[in-house]
Amino acid sequence: MMEKILHSARTHLESTPNAGHDITHTLRVRDLCLHISRFEGGDPEILEASALLHDIGRPAELKDPGTDHAALSAQLSPCILDRAGFPAQKILAVVYAIANHRYSSGITPDSLEARILQDADRLDISGAVGTAMTFAYSGAHNRRLYHPDDPLASQREPDGKEYALDHILTKLMLLPGSMHTGTARGMAEERNRFLQSFVDQFIHEINTGRGPGNE
Image (spheres, rainbow, N blue to C red):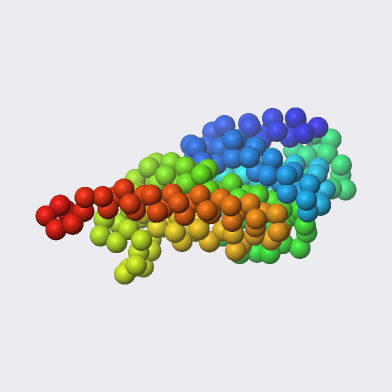
């Protein structure tokens, strides 16, 4: 059953040009969901199915930014689940989790499974993996690494759509506070320790040799 669902997810995602949100992201989110569930509870079938299908609408969103990939993924999922033989009484729970997983929605879902999916999806854009995804996305969209005069945005408004480092500072570093479960929050805090050390080293390297006469 899950193999059929995974096959459908692969089919939908194979056309995405977004290396950060390809099938490997989907598989990591699935694994994170199941890991969190071992400590927090939740229905493993609902979690695995919702994780596998949560981004299948993303290729359409990349073609048309007006598309909400979470809503489209939720819309496409019932047919896939039904064909795979997924328990009918659990389909609505999967659809609900998928529809409410999006970071930018600011929604706190009612179901435990939906909260875990949100946590897992956010965890995957944190830490080392999230840093790699940020720079991959920034390169693909011709965004600069950092502001040359104020890389830490200490005297300007940060702009995560223009500078990769700003995105790290204004989104990735804040992720632990957005987690719903204690398990995910602890994992996010651990990943943030790496992220802070990365930012510190990044700033150290770009400042090496800077000074009067060295700009």
